[in-house]
Image (cartoon, rainbow, N blue to C red):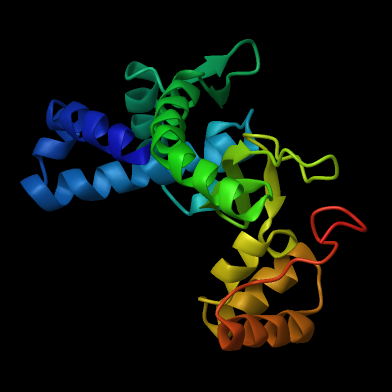
Length: 212
């Protein structure tokens, strides 16, 4: 979804006088990157004030104001009255929804085949920060089965897919993740090593207690 935001902001910034005063290509790209950082922070901390964004991202208030104005003009964020704090609009949900719908259409045939061959539930998930988001789930036809909820978010270490992702990370990145989510970093590193050695990840009770 951010590729779409980037393209629209790049075109918008081309039309703004403050960008024309600086190096054409490098200036535009830098301005768009700043705007995307601001957009991400608004999405995380909304509703959020202009000054709070400036402090958090270590940016001048004037730079933040210009980017907020550009984002609002493009329809990605809006200001809530009377607090004058900023929130994201539902436009990003439409973009993400279209992206996930395309992923689901491509993944579903393979997941159906996997369910047929194994008799088990099959899911396709993508990484979103420290979480996995279930894009599409095909449930087993067995009476006792794991049911996946499309659109649900889970910490990486709680899904086998997430554990496989963690196993591809560096030691420092895994330690940082463990610290952020409040789990034993040493144990997680050991599990990552076991995953790499086996070539696949195993999830015992991570999704739900008693479910493997």
